[in-house]
Image 1 (cartoon, rainbow, N blue to C red):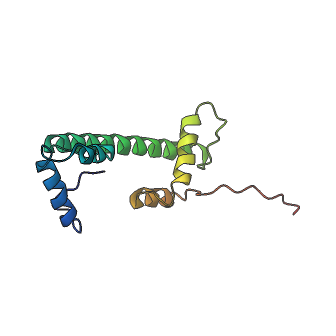
Image 2 (cartoon, rainbow, N blue to C red):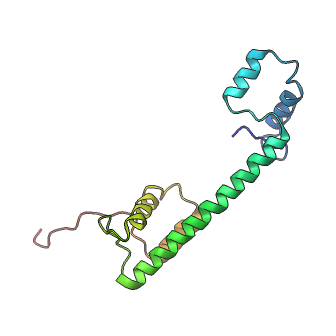
Image 3 (tube, one colour):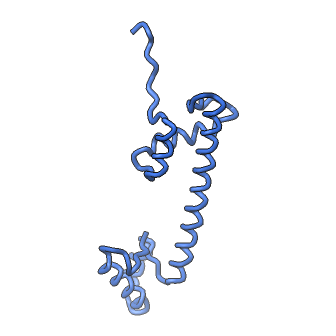
Length: 134
């Protein structure tokens, strides 16, 4: 995002520039303001606080949803002895979709989530089963 805080390590010069742009809003050429608006520049610190709050709330919501799905996966494993949830299962379709999403995000996933899945021996890829005759 375009919300560069003055305490961002390594971005102090950029944060200073952002602050100056906020102060110069009334005197800057309209074309510059349009360019900054086009990239989502945040003009007021009140907006910054609101956006940070919204992002924090969304983060909490997504963490709760992830943890809820993880608990569903654990329950499924307890009942079935494995975590191989079929996408065709009408009662577990949303869990199967979540599992597919985790597999797609394996290399981008937050480490603590990956560790939780690794701890239960989660299968990160599903290969085709080999025919025993081959």
